[in-house]
Amino acid sequence: MLERFKNLKFQKKIFIICLLTSFLPTIILGFFCYNQVRDLLIDREKTVLRDSLLQENLRISSRLSEYDNIANYIIWNNDVLKILNGKYTTNYEMYVAYTKSLEPFTTTLQYLYPDISEITIYSDLNIYPRKTKLEPLSEISHLSWYADACSTQRPIWLYSFDEHTLSLVNRFYDIPADQTSLIVVTLNYDQVFASLSSLYTESYGVILIDGQGQQIYNYSTADMQNDPLSAEQLINAQLHTRELASYIIETVPTLNNDWTLCIYRPVSTITEPIQVITSTIVVIIFICLLLVLLLSSWLSSMIVRPLEKLSDNMRQVEQGNYKVTVSYHSSDEVGQLLQTFEHMVHELNHLINETLNAKILQTKLELKSLQAQINPHFFYNSLSLINSKAILAGQHEIGQVTRYLSTFYRTSLNKGKDLISVQDELENVRSYINIQLMMHSDSFDVVYDIDEEALSCSMINLMLQPLVENALKHGIDCKTTAERGCLAISIRSSENALIFQISDNGPGIPESQLARILTCNSDGYGIGNVHTRAQLQYGKQYGLSYSSEMDKGTVATLTIPKQGFSDITTTP
Image (cartoon, rainbow, N blue to C red; front, side, top):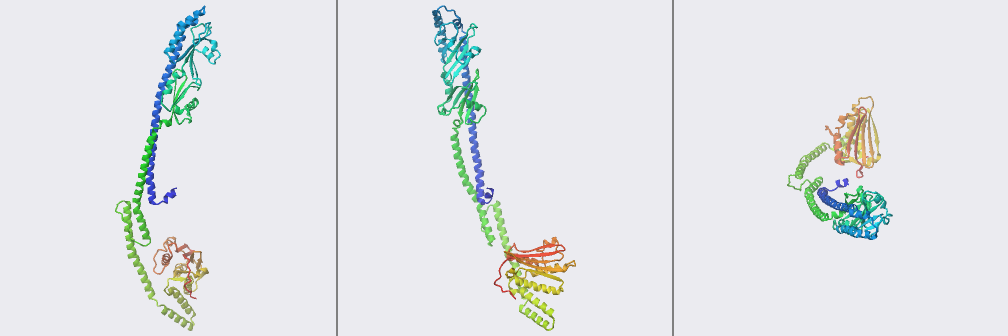
C-alpha cells in the first residue's frame, strides 16, 4: 500500500493528504459528539431511574411496614385477645362477641386500608369458626409455611408470582402457651404494586425479587412484553455479565425486608433522541466532505499545475530544447524553484552555445591542422622508395621497418574515416609493436589472444595503439626486475560487447595514481583521450578501465559495444 502511494502522481498525493487530514478529524469529531451525547443521556437516565427507584422503594417499604404494623395492632388488640381467650358457654355468646367486636374491628381496618382484601385469624382454641374471619388451624396446618409461622417471632410474607397473591402472617403472643393463633392479612396484589406499573409510559420493566432470587412481582410495558427480563438475568447482570449490555439497570434493596427492587430500560429507547442529532451530524459530515473534495481538488491542481509545466519543460530540456515556457509569479518555494530552473537553463544554454561549441570547433580545427600536415600520397610514395632502395642495397631490416611504418600510417590515417575494422586496428597495433621490437632489439615478448569472431566488427580508429604505447613506455621500459618483459594483447567477443585488454609485467601503478589515470592530462594523444572518445561514441557505460598490482604489472581494459562492419573492406 505504501509503495502504491509513493508511485502516485504528486497531485493525487496532495489530494489524498488533504482529504484524509480533513475527513478524519470530521469523522472523529462526529463520533465523539455522538458518544458524548449518548453517554450524557445514559448517565442522566441512570440518575432518573435511580431517583425513581429510591422513591418507589421508599413507598413500598413504607406500605409493607404499614401492613406489618396493622398485623401487630391486631395481635395486640385487647378486644381481639378477649375474644380469643374468652370462655363461652353457648354458641350465641360467641356469635355476639364476633359480631359486636371482631367483625366491626376487621371491617373498619379493611375500610381504612383498601389494599387489605381479607383478615383471617386461625386458632386451635375451642371456638366456633366464622368464615373469612375466624378459622381453625387445621385449615392451614398442611401448608409449607405453617411450621415457620408457628415457630418464628417475626412476621412472614407469603407471595406467589404465578397466582398474584401477597399475604402477611403473624403469630399471637398474649395467649396461653399451649395454644397457637395466627393472623393472615391478605393483600390485594395488584393494588399494592400498582404504582410500579406507572413509573413510565413506555419501554421499561420492574422486578421485585426475594432473597432467594424468586420473583415477587414482574411488570413490563407492552412494547417490552415480547422479551421481558427475568430475575435470573437481573441477578447475572448484578454479577457483571455482558448479557444485558443493551439495558440500563438499577437495583435497590427494600428497607424492611431482604427483597430487591430492580428497574430496567433499553438503551435504544434512551438514545432514541440522538437519532435526530446523528442525522444532523451525518448531513454536516457529508457537506464537509463535499467541500473538502472540491477544495482538495482545487488546491492540489493549483499547487501541481506549475510543477507539471516545470516537469514538461525539463523533458524538453532533456531533448535539447532550452526554451523555458513556464511562468509563475509567486515568491513561494515553487516560484523560487521555477526561477532557479529558468536561470539554470539559461546558463546551460549559454555554456553549450559558447563554451562547448567553441571547444568542438577548436578540436575540429586541430584535427584538420594535423591532417593537413600529412600528405598521404607523398608519404606512402616516399616510404615505398626507401623500401626499394633498402632492398637494392641489401638492407633488409631498413626495408622491413619501412613496410611496418607504411602499414602503421596507412591504418592510422584510415582514408580520413573515424571507424575501422577490428582486424585493421589490430594490424595497426602489430605494425607499431614490430617497429618497437626492432627498436628494443627484441628485448620483450609479445603474446596475442585474438577471438576471430571479433575481427569483422567495427571500432573507433586508433584506440589500441595509445594503450600499447603506454604499456611499453611506463610498463616494460620501466621494469626493475630481471624478468624479461612481456606484452599481452587480448581481444574477446561476448554477446553484446568487445573487450580489449593490454597487459604488461612492468612495475605497476600506485593506487593513488591509478584513481586519476583517466582524468589527468598528457602532452600527446594519451589514454584519457581514448576513454573520452569511447564514452562520447558509445555512452557512459563503456570506456577504459585500469587495474594494477605493484611489481607484477598493469592491465588496461577497453570495452565497447559489439557492432558489425560489413561495409568496410579489410585491407590484406
